[in-house]
Each structure stands twice: as C-alpha cells, then as structure tokens.
Length: 283
Image (tube, rainbow, N blue to C red; front, top):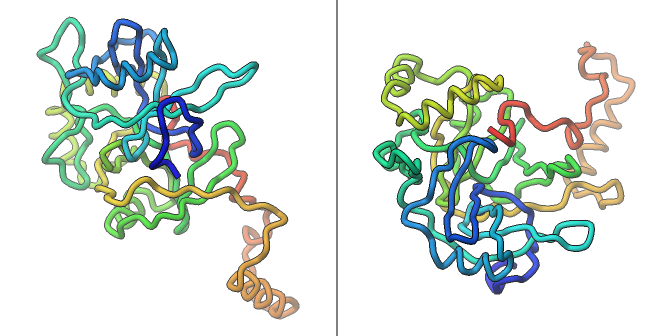
C-alpha cells in the first residue's frame, strides 16, 4: 500500500515512528524535550530536507517509520493531514552542536540482547500483553492489532523482561528496544551504565527528574517490516470460527459448579484500557 507513494501523497498508514525535526536552513535534529539540547544528524540527509521543504517551507517535525518511510503532518483546515515525504536510511551520528566529541551513534553496532541501549530511545511504539501485540492510537486510545508475527526470540525476550506486558519501540532500521526497571543482569547493567555516552547519561537524568526511572534495553531485531497494523475490533464484526467455538464452549459450561476467582468476574475491557505506563510517549 505504501510502495507506490509520491512526495506529497496522503499517508495511508498510521502516524508513528522515530521523531526528528527540520528547519529551512537544512538542519535535522533529535531532541529529548522542548528546550533541551538539539542533537544534529550528521551527515545531514539533504535529499530528505529538500523533499520536506517542498511540502513545508518552514520545515517541522517528521516521523521515520520502522521501515524508513518519512511522514509529516500539515495543516488541513482546522485539522492536520498525514503526508508522505519519502524514505531515508538513517546513519551516522547525533552531534551536540558545541561538543562534537560527545556525539552518539544513531545505529549502535555490537549490541547484544539484554544490553543497555547506548543511543537515544525512540522509534515506532507498540505494546504487548498475553500473546497480543498492538499499536495504540494516541488520539482515540483504541488498540489496533499487529498482524505481523514477531521473531520468537524477540517475543520471548520481551516476555522475560516484562512478564505483565508493556511497550517497546522499533527503530527505522529494525532494532527492538524497551524500558525496564530491573535489568536482566544488574551487575552488567551497572558496568554498562558507566560506559554509556555522556549524552545518553544526561538524557537518563532528565528522564529521572520527570519520574521515569527505567533503563533502555536492547531486545533484538525485526527483519520483516513494516509491521502490519489492522483496524480495532468493531461490535458489528463477524465472529471467526474460532471465536464462535470459544463462545459456544463457554456457554455450554454455564451452570456447572466450579471454584471461581473474584477477579474473573470484574469488568475488564482490554481493547480500551489506558496505554501501558512503562513507556511514556515523550520518553
């Protein structure tokens, strides 16, 4: 659906991805919070900037999806339209303007599963729980099921790190990262924390000051991208054969005397819960 898009076409998918900013001077940067230092992308993806300025002459915010598609939002009357810009292969460094010696690799190499993530924590955000994976619409809060199967080693690592479920990010180059309170190997994590780039340490301090006391962990890599996201369930949807069978099986057990757990009788609507709180959107 996204293979034949041209610059300026409406973006038919959901608006998500690694966050970057641009301006008319041709700069591209990543920023933790408004008012904090800009980390400039070097080398600058000049073609991307030229494409964006054709749509937004003042530049602005862009997102880079998990398969390197670049999208932005433009004013459309009283609302905003999601617009396709092009593709970009992010590489190089994120560079503090006055201290280039403290630059950070955009795509870290040589990172093993369970290691602290030595770059900025960003990417397309997804969530998981009890074998389900979804993308949560920040506007409607509806959960959109992810149909693409993740590699088993990725799902197993996520489940081990977060047994109750939670959220994770997928970078434009396919790395999967997540936030944890308790790293799998505390001794190694403590050693790696001391070795993190100075910029990343300062970002962690900023997050702690805002109440986010978690560490970014590398989980694995996804080769099959983009992740296919479908519409949330509607109350008028036709039941599948499996769903009908489960419903009939449950109906057939009504009236049987079995021990029950009070929690089984509390109302729970998983498709309209609040978003998991382990990964704030502005982290």
